[in-house]
Image (cartoon, rainbow, N blue to C red):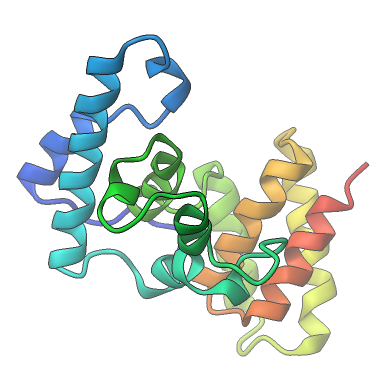
Length: 181
């Protein structure tokens, strides 16, 4: 199952301590932004070299099919279309949210992740008949924890992917959470 932080080496833990995952805090300090970008780059390179980032998280970033609303482009391709290429992507302030996901997994409370994973596991093999109840469970969890529906929808999409749901089933979970009024 997914939703867990990756295991970090001691050197990666030191890099994580240097990375501020919130880019808006560096908008007025170019030196801090540069240092943050270099730490993010070093951390990402280390994680990639030892293949520590789960495949589903990499696909979420690199596969256009996993980018709902991406108009046929992956998240990575959007960086390129906007003029950022190669390893410069790993230093870019907008990459930080992706790196945060690579390291920590979906941005949901641990109890929500655990509850959803338990629901998925309880299905045995998830079938089309399980998707509506799983979506209802996700909505219930989002409401119970007063999560913003728009942000939570994307995080449940990631979590559903990490729990082994196919792309379209994960999207249905996302859409269910997004429908919260």
